[in-house]
Image (cartoon, rainbow, N blue to C red; front, side):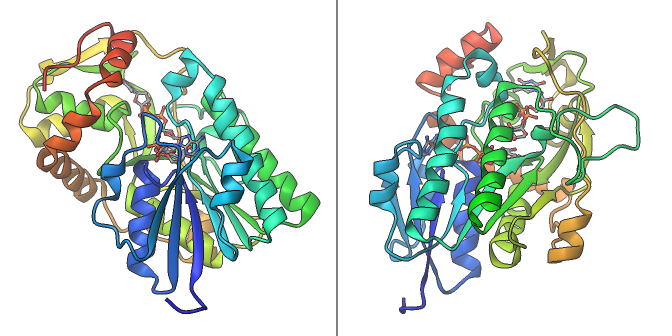
Length: 345
Ligand code: NAD
Ligand code: TDX
């Protein structure tokens, strides 16, 4: 490391996407080192950081809503903050929104204040398509960067509020901020409360797969490393103040996602169990990624087939990871959410 080394402060880097981003950043850049600041909530997992180069990656346990902790952890010359830290599960926000407001809103403002106070050069906010609400089904409608905000869940509302704070910091104080808005990620190390890893882990145990409502909701899926490449481009080349939608033009009905999964695993469709719908369940997400394609030259590398295959294989080969995440508090969560027990591991 030289004096030109760039210090990147990544928040939420022990989670699913944050840990994939750190891997990519360290692989694809020679001049960056990372401080990974994470509160290790139920979703944070130090196992996700296995194999990272200790000379270029420093883990700090801390909460982004705690200004003092953030200031202590920030290096003297931090080049950029990339903010992944969030409460990220819609169902949990419906059960109780308090932590979503503290982390997703207050936490983001604390980071923006630190950027200003400490002269950090860039701030990247990892946001979501959900801030734009739900699209009509069977219509040629897509989310663009100009789509109005219409968050429908407490999670989406907290992420929308965070985006407003980022925008305000850019407008009022001239901070160099970039926002990325992505759709549904899938890939290795995703916490099995989310639909795809939950379905994979249940199918591997011949346990029923809960599908909300009629299974006709549509999500726009993207392989996690493709999302991370978009964030890296935003960090390196994004226009100050810009918002970029990130999507792989890969819409699927939930029921078809489960169908593909069961086919790949050679498991019967009788594992599908239709359950009570999620309150306020958004019907369709679909992203128009034209801006990031044209302006930053981003393209996804993974197809749905290759990405799904890699993902399934990872869960098959990492049963210890899965067993550890599905133990303890997860069992209580699962019982409350689905009214049944998680299959014994
Ligand atoms: P995740 O739940 O897997 O990980 C979140 C991480 O943040 C965990 O390591 C957790 O310990 C940490 N964290 C939570 N609260 C914190 C706090 N107060 N201070 C410090 N760390 C804290 O989430 P993910 O799926 O990796 O999502 C990462 C980001 O990407 C989130 O901001 C999310 O809104 C956004 N996003 C996710 C998706 C998706 O499909 N998963 C899609 C678009 C955007
Ligand atoms: O058990 C389930 N059964 C089911 O049918 C679960 C957990 C989900 N679903 C449905 C709800 C959604 O239509 O599957 C779809 C995907 O659900 P989630 O994995 O909970 O994701 P979603 O609500 O679409 O939000 C995700 O994408 C945007 C992430 O969790 C967010 O963090 C991200 O911002």
